[in-house]
Length: 114
Length: 112
Image 1 (tube, rainbow over the protein chains, first blue to last red):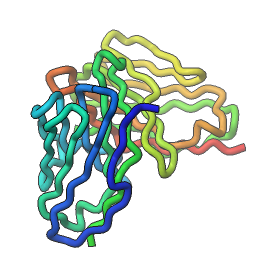
Image 2: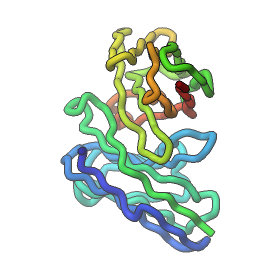
Image 3: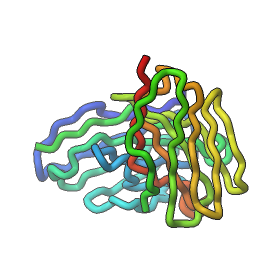
């Protein structure tokens, strides 16, 4: 199995608190992505990274920040959680041309903001 | 911008065929297809690069018409294991970090 893990798997947090989700990979892939999945919306891109300290915004980046200080870790932070950020969050990795561009997804983090 | 998938849902009997379509208003570098089963992560099926190349994966194949910015996924002689939600993902190439924009998905149910 591809080495990608997300933590935590489930989290319940209160409105207004900061939350950090972690994505860890052991594949040494250059590209990493954060998506959220909501019923009726499919998968929507939050942020992505194309190298250490190189990140860019996706279509739904408001209220989120990311950091990538090492190849293997990509952190997603909800600066002040709101109920609209209740969702399932998926991290994905890709080696680009090395892996024929296909994504491997983590198992997801189910986040509930109350 | 999210690509548009059609139909939203399909119900098949085992052995029947189905086509899922994906279209974009933007020029495409490639199109990906993924399948997600309930409660699981999406799984990569195949990628189609510019050039209209058709790829296959067992009894699942796809085409890509870059001029029309459309792709279609073909499932032939469907099996129960094909049930799930299918997503197409479109991307603009290396300058966008190969980041994918996914459609909203097509739910496929194969019944005995």
